[in-house]
Length: 407
Image: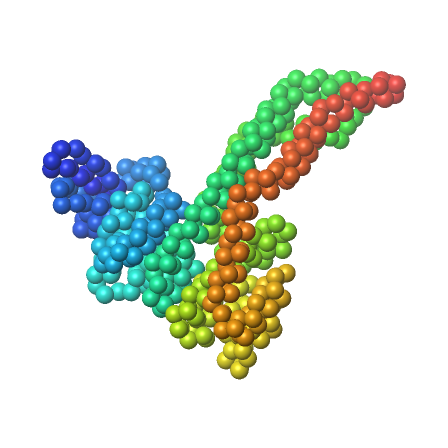
């Protein structure tokens, strides 16, 4: 249920209106971030008004998640009590859903519930890998570091998505112009050529027939143009849900450029978490259990599960890594070599952190160059589309001589 909270400053008299998605007035006050110098009026938003508000207000996402975890990390670093730390985040987030979630989590914490369990109930905001990381932080007693890492990861993901969206602007404009050209030719050149070839008892070239079919669909069913736009918007909106599907993960990891990015991302998260737990003296099999749950890719879940089973059967960590190195891709042997060095020198956590840092640096470089990575693909697609349009439009002109001589 949406709650409308109007906060009035007792000194200035200025009002601020905030929406909170929660069930009770008490939680609405927490989610609105009410201070001691403000009075509040709370009202329920129901019916058509609620539907309009839900459609027009922000749903929350990467930016709210980054703000929340960054703020929590700063509060925990300064030993601010956990419940108050969550209260302080209410004014950092913008969406009613996140404000309501903060209020729900804060109330659960006051009742003695673990933070990871309270956050796990907000499954639409915090994915399973984020909850696993938080549980790892609780186990190791290093929640501020975990929160900073989650915020950094979400910030990098947000930056990559922004670059992808920016890279799609130019292809989108050209595609729109292409559709405009097709519609224009459907009214002018194509009908004239169709009549001419019919009078000459000749058939139009195949590319022109295809163009006529496309133009016929656009003229009779113009709403079809909206379908690809909706598909692209839904892809970006539901990317996290799509990428969690095992079949999609298996398909993408075999893709040349995208697969490399996915491997490095999953490796960085997994090895950083494992190093954190080992450094905190967590039992190795338990650390591998938590790391498996933290891993968001199916290959790395399988890798850490199998390594754990080998440890239980008596193998050392380097030997277990070596047996299952095929899950790690082209860098598998390199990582196994580093683990052998770690076993000899006793610097396991340092080398695991080093691997994670190297991968994170590479991912930063890829994020900065993402627009250049998609540029060749964009050129090929746009070139094919423009070339096909030109050929379909001019093919009847080039074939007109043959039709006339046949007549």
